Length: 408
Image (cartoon, rainbow, N blue to C red):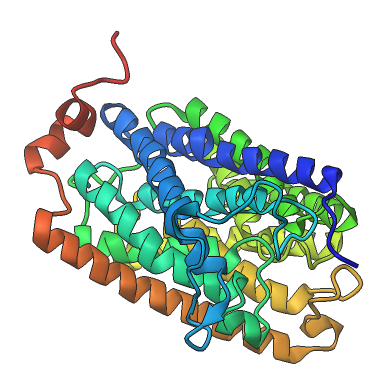
């Protein structure tokens, strides 16, 4: 039987696309903006705004085509048919989401590319040139995100190997977290490395919008409005809630008091960790994934970062990289075939899946780190990555944008 458009699936995918868009603008913008110093709030928000716009243009012109085109070059990249969006009919159905128009699937995947590069900005805030960031976004989406997304989701060699990533544990979170680490090693430390959120209320709103939008991110990745979407939805919420509780307990044990920053950090860590597993695991598995991931990210931020001395300003590597790592491996442990027949993990009789997940993590992290270093180094040589000392000390809003977030 030929595929037939399903209006319910199409409506759900359109809503999911809008939800994922909310994650970047305004979710990431507010979440990151509230955590920075008040003299850098607009610059921090701008980095997310401009990343979304640049990635959106790249995606429709050639990014989608290279990512989801017919596999070639032994699983490395897709065949870029339909460049510049040519030849894509209004009523043409997607070959990967067979009950919705291809235009809808393209838009949905566009929002993933945009948020992935926007996440990287949190590590380099308060010290990177706007012009260099814009060039970095274009180069990184084209040379890092697109090939990795093809390997995992577009039928590339990791997909052929059997790697599981329901909504972006490797493609989005490990990728962005490791890229962030590479970029900050090139940039160096800020002159003032203290994390003193100037408006934590912004970050709470941003975290809430991220949590809200994440239902489109994860449940939308079912690509249909059915039972799998519902299962991914409840797994997503459960893991986030468990991770928030876990982080609050850690705060109590360490300081005797819960913190709002810790609570929202835990929720985001839980959302990150459940992303690759959302459409494969039970609710019980989601609880375990959420409880454990806060410990993983907390230890990374509190012990690994000070020990190694890198300045991950807003803990992109600590949360997205490390919780993404745990989530990808946990998928290989907890994937249940009665939730999704495409995935069977170690605890359900398939130890080989965990090995496959390890290979995917190593390949994605390794390529993202090296490629980001090369891109960053070239940009640094050509136009410089870092702002002048005077601009950094005085603040980037007034120096790079001639604007200020507050007139009081």
